[in-house]
Each structure stands twice: as structure tokens, then as C-alpha cells.
Image (cartoon, rainbow, N blue to C red; front, side, top):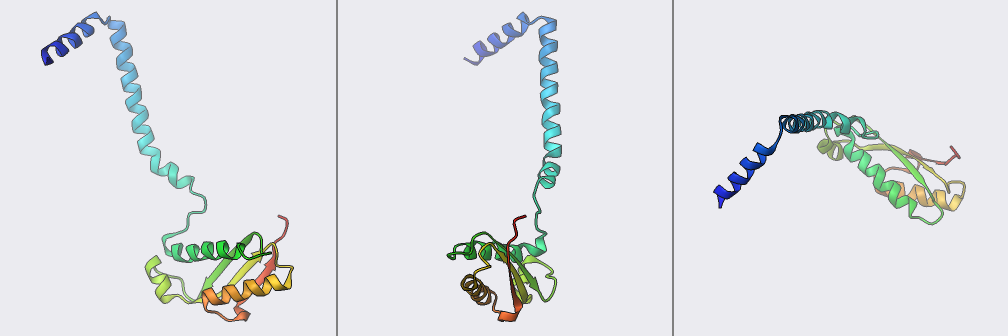
Length: 145
């Protein structure tokens, strides 16, 4: 069976003209070159196109901000929310952030912050999550920008 296969392949190559062989060789070399170029630039491309990728030392705080934004936006009347949390020390690594850095405060910008009842709900929620006092939470109404 394998002799028949090799004979068919051999016969096919014999039928190729030199022009056909040259075209195949150029196509194979071009495909190889494109593959090498894409593989070489894959990491650079991914890094350049990562929007505001957090540094490894801020992964935990960024995750907490996103989680807080998600939960606050579910409160009736809050609307779209942005949260920034500040810490007492710059964490050395993501693992040490949760264990050694204590939240100093939070800024919350929300669409529904013009409503006093909504502001109180936001403030109480942020205090509960971060374990901070009311004076450490600043809430502002989101602008039209």
C-alpha cells in the first residue's frame, strides 16, 4: 500500500514542470516567512493592544474596584459607576496587596449621585466592602463627558 502511495507522489512530481516547482517553492517559503513574522510579533501585538493593562502589583485592587462598580451599578437609581480605591502603601505584589495594604479611601462617580437616597446607599455599600469610615468615601455625580 505504501509503495503505491509513494509511486503516485513520485509520478505527480515528475509531471511538474520546473515553473510549477518554482511557484510551489515560492509559496511555501512565503508561508513560512509570514508564519515566522506573525509568531515573532504576537507578544508585542498583544501587549500594545491591551487597553490599560494593570500592572501585576495592582491586580487585586483593580479587581476589587471592578467588582464594586458591578455591584453598585445594580442598586436602584445608581446607574453607571466608576470607582477608585486608594491604599496606605504601594503593594509589592498582588499576593501581598490583600494582606498588607489597607484601604485609605474611595472615590465613587455615579450617574444617580444627585439623589440623596442613592448617595447614602452608595456610601454605606462602599464602607461595608472596604471597612472604612464615611469620611473616607467621596461620592460625585457623573458628568456628561
